Length: 229
Length: 195
Image 1: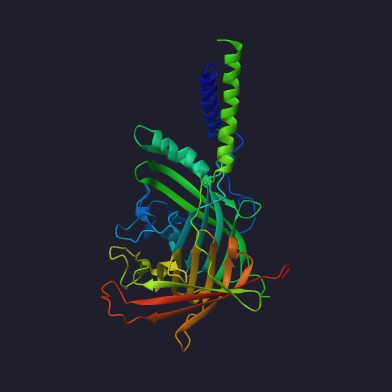
Image 2: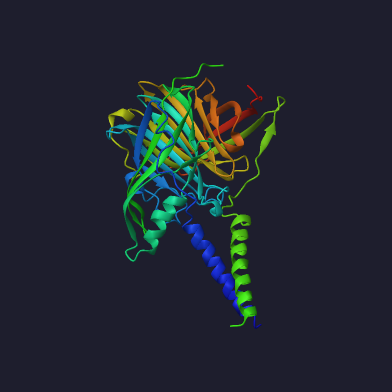
């Protein structure tokens, strides 16, 4: 018993130390720069609001801080889809002109490993741009840096909010370069296989409501269709 | 403080570090609920699987210009570029009528795309399917199409998807839309290596 108390105290200190090192892990760095920035190929940029109330529709299981929108929308409460959210949004180009529709499915990933600084989301975009074409984006997103830099500070803040300027590329795969896979559907994207990245530009976050001012952007490498086999 | 007490404390610190590291490594942070995949194997080594949507209960969103919207307070953006585009969001069920995922169906006409009917089926524990369908249904009311992309379990699969909508006359009060069912049948086979 004489040595048990210091041992227990040591366990607590060790656990706490480990968590602090994990939180401030200098070896885990988010992407502040898009891997496509140096690709040299033409890029298609699409932007959308990450504020649920500024979307066409947003839904999840209804138990999260981000409330489904509009109010009477069906919620994803069934066990198989409880850890999934869906966003239906208008996509605009760099000048703010509406270009089309986007539906984003996002599910918590079982490959999440906090030990490696990874809070992973398996997400997929279904994009329809009437003047260009339709496409599908498959990506793994790492939201750890967004959570660490914005969500947790907002919760710990006495004002229950965060304000500032934060930019980060959330796409972390599935390609080896950490980009998303794009499969074209119709129009200029028909039979195209290319890459994309998604980024977040956040300016304000409320611990009670979620994003207050934040935009998401999709950058897609524009390539010519591959020949049909 | 004696040296043995100090040693106990140091061993405790190391134990705490190892304990948390093991906990974070071995205890899964996310555990998606799984339903058994109800697949029929085909002679060519592929498989078929059927999903369905019960209408109107499983329709989460219906939006389009000048159309009735679901939910009733949904504000569809009035922008010219969308034209007659229509977006729908559904819960999808397996053969046992259990919800296994969510799906989007986008249809419309674009200057670059022509008539488009597309589905994206998202099954959180398994992966996602993306398919283009024929814009016009055949004589039997079905649309068929090609799988364009699949992720995780459906990666490197190719095949077709068939959509059929049928009305159900069961005498139910249908204030929230027509009663019916959208049936989706996938027939997929793994791409041969090197193809």
